[in-house]
Amino acid sequence: MFLNSHPDSLPYLKLHTNKKIIIEVTEQKPINLKHTSQAILYLKKKGIQFALDDYGAGYSNLERFNLLKPDYLKLDKSVIRRLDISTYRFLFEEITQLCIKKNIPVIAEGIETMIDKELCLNLGIKYGQGYFIGKPEIPKEIITMNS
Image (cartoon, rainbow, N blue to C red; front, top):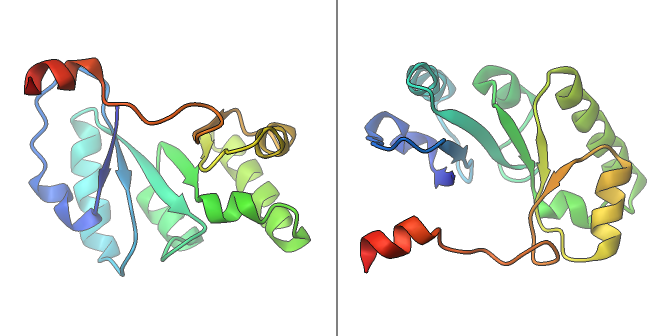
């Protein structure tokens, strides 16, 4: 199960579940990298994995990628929308190859057409999300617990 979280909230997370949890770290504003990387390291020791979300937008960059050491990298849909521009395509290919070498799964966000899906598959991206693949759903366990 993927959960979104701002890096500032990581030290306060108290997750009690036997489900595999992957926290999506979003970076919509500047963060304290040292504080965030320490919180991630602590939670990783508890078996929680991390995805660097919206990569290619906001404050995400290679420094954050290197320091936060994500288990997954989620490419922002704004990057996917610009794959027809050679500069974006080159950066996309380089980031994808880096992740493949580091054994980090890449997830393309915003797959809304067959063309989006085919472009990503041709570049080595095996995972994606978007309305072409399926609409977001609330897990049945949550519906049952909140009923």
